[in-house]
Picture 1 (cartoon, one colour):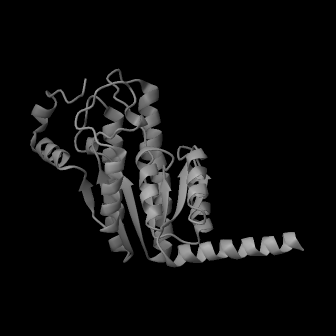
Picture 2 (spheres, rainbow, N blue to C red; picture 1 turned 135 degrees about the horizontal axis):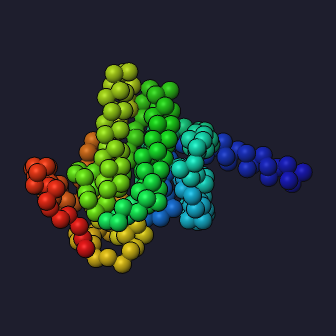
Length: 266
């Protein structure tokens, strides 16, 4: 009898959580196990959001679930695997519904030697995996006629960077892809908002190669900027005025001069 009552109470609690997610602020964050994604998750949870968190490693996600009981569901998703979009849809279904999809997952290296494995891994994650996840989120929001997709691209997508060919190319792809989806959503009469967030160098494990990076930003500061951009439904956000100035100057450089420039941190 006691077990039966406990199961009923647990079912009622889960139903209440789902209803809150349906009628409140709810999001899925892809790449939430560390760095920027983890910090954004913490900020939104403190604001009372209900989150579906996804990453390959689930230990940090489980810790957040314990810290914020009733606000977190999580799943292990490797975006480079074929069929991983079904796992994203399952997580969304467990949430009840969501109003925001935030894509933070990505990899990158400086690769002056043009190591093939690094280049192809970058494409697998930042282009193919990105398309799987963002495309699935887009199809979900199309089915609801509304939603918000935010992605963390990079200032590296502004120009082709010889020091990081695949990284800069895939980040340019990411920005162009959501620009195309934004136009398509408008053509189809769907109320879907898009936010392209472009940070520069951020102090995360991605930059744990021992190099010294200029204008380095903390993940906490970048996360605050991301939350502000999402809440205000900004379209394109270059984080930090110094990077806004830098990228504006880059765009003014003609191609014949750009190819002669050394744009690298070491």
